[in-house]
Image (cartoon, rainbow, N blue to C red; front, side):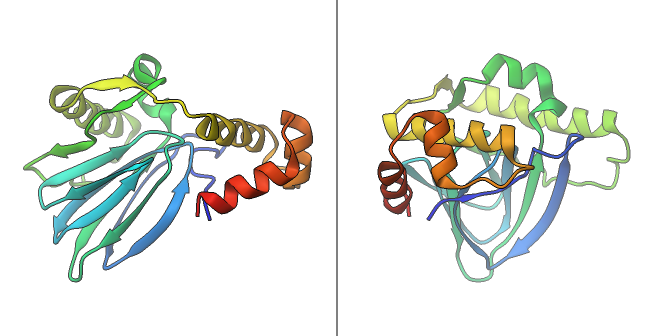
Length: 190
């Protein structure tokens, strides 16, 4: 099953961070960028159809609407950072149709949040992380599969109608796909 989370759909841009340990999280997607920084242990993360191993002093960046989920090894501690694309608008506009070829980035300095008490500090911090992404990996066009394209159509519909009750039947009628096909697609993406 694919979980859709509303991160990034709030009325004002979000910037959230929290530490997690020994957590496994199923495949999901959301409109926000997500960074997972490993402080101790190891994380195995699936992003779209690829699996990556993230070690201490590394982070992985997940772009908006990428399918992803992770499993932590025992005794692992990591920091998750979620933020709206609008906060890093220049980066988002330049790379909005692209993703990182290898989203695992080395960063010897663990993220600290004490100095992030205003939007300028937050932007500076996030643009610093974006700079490391641009320096350490190639950003390439998203690989479009017909299934991912369909999932993105569904996400766009949900983004536009999330304040209303949304059923798969309504979505299928609106985007012009067969209800049974969409139902099987969601079952297959478990």
